[in-house]
Length: 257
Image (cartoon, rainbow, N blue to C red; front, side):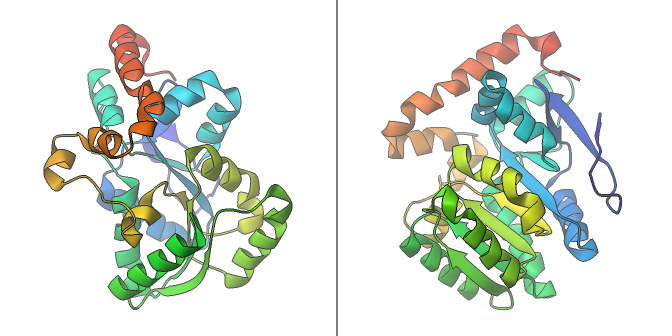
């Protein structure tokens, strides 16, 4: 299956529709190249870094499913998605973790002197994230950093602030239940070449929390590390075994075109 972009300047990308959610088959390098083309051409894309929890949410909520299906690029951020695609016989190239994709885009931004806007988390965390990223990528232009605690009646002011800053990249860290719907609702007003929800990435970059050790990442146990550090995530994490059991049971119906 091909996911057709809304933007004619960009090529179609190969996808695999897991329960109707079209996941990109591109590897990390191809994904970065594709998004670099978007910046170069001035196109505007919403990127979703999706995992099994988000797929399960989409199956239970038509509004969520529409948001996912209307995104321009959905990358498999979650070992469970990579496993499911492989199990169903239509594998993706590799896991494309949102945290890693952010840094890969920043590396390109370093050479291209891209402008970046950070939106989300607390005022302290987003400012510290901007400082840490500026230290690591000194040639990137950080044109804005605003916390994510604003009401719906403040949306227009936030949108105006972002438009005036004219970033090439907009990273939004407001939590999965808020960031994707917000980007989807306002993407046409924002007109940023690459808009991407990044979940808890600001917390990790700022040093507020830690990412799983590399050995746990390699063993696809990053979810377990997060659960051990944040036991309150237990209820949300129950979607993971539910997803796995559903995939096993539905093997012939996982790929839903």
